[in-house]
Image 1 (cartoon, rainbow, N blue to C red):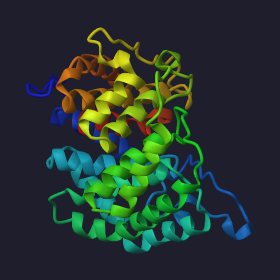
Image 2: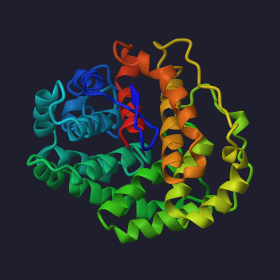
Image 3: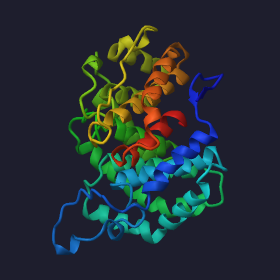
Length: 337
């Protein structure tokens, strides 16, 4: 991988993109193994993943299937002629149809806490990505997804006032992560009520935070940094001057050119929980890259991001299914924001 001369960010080549494309292609229509995370109310709830979620039934679980489809769109946008692109286009058109998406709307209405907030966030990110894709097939895909995205926007708006405290873990339930992609969607679609809800609760939850104990990170199963996810949200919702004041109180060590974080180490990539640490390296990297691009005074974070990517990237292609069904999306989000 080469570095962009303007931003310093490590960049993907089209060959590397083709390798990454193989990850969602390999799992998008692989129905089993599958984790449905389902609460059964009767025998009628028992059905196959494809029957329950015909748009997003592969890649082990619903949220990974969603961001696998996001990965295909993101790679096609950046590299229209990428290897595997024809197959990816066929999968997107086959899966994301009004009829298939209607099944997920129906399911979510009956299971209002399901995939909250992680899957919700990735579905909004997929919709956001499609909105900015200058390709003839994007329009029908957006039209199919918009009713589900609208439903999730309303569910966020209804849920956030009830959430008394933010969830600060390094896994799926992290509140800041869930709000970050939702914020980007709300800006793209001019969803003012969702913007207002996120901005209010982000400040309620995080504005008074100080001295985040980043030295305690990571926990053994983390794929998100609780401290950095909070930073990633607040850099979006606060104006620059206010954000920099907040950052100097919340994570002052980040401002120092000597700031360092050892990469998350993975000792067994066939363990579905332990391989989370590769995801942590990519999610840390996307925050570091974004901060360095947005704030030149934080440019020293580019090198730290590069080190995190360099540790985990070589293990992506040919990795076990425990990591392969989801980690490509994290690498792509770090390298193709």
